[in-house]
Image (cartoon, rainbow, N blue to C red):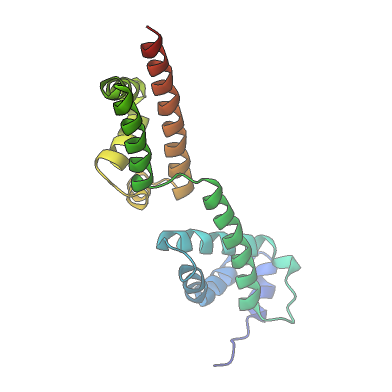
Length: 188
């Protein structure tokens, strides 16, 4: 199928015609989302990245060479954003419920061998109680109710990276609190 001539819409968009750019978006969004969706585990990430592609494309429209096809240029932007997205997700290695459970089990086993299992559980409950309501609710939703991050994102309206980073920070906070409490309990 021959590619549709996007030149008139691109030229109008370069002059600030938002309606023309909207038509470009409508023309290319399905293929672009599909291109991203097959490369991502979470479908809502494809939606988010596709939106970012079109925002960035609109901002960089002056850099586009009108002698070249528009769709490959959009895909190039998409692949750059996808690389950045993967780097960001990989940098926020937050683990899933199974990872957390294995760490907790290992800690419990070590404490049990040392005779401190009850201390650990008490410290955990105390530290959870010291969290503000929103972080405590997030931890309980994720790890007690076993609600996956994508569902938490949908319910809260927050981005995946924001939720995973928040969970990561809360776990660090809980660990430090538990270690302080156990450190105090062991020296007394």
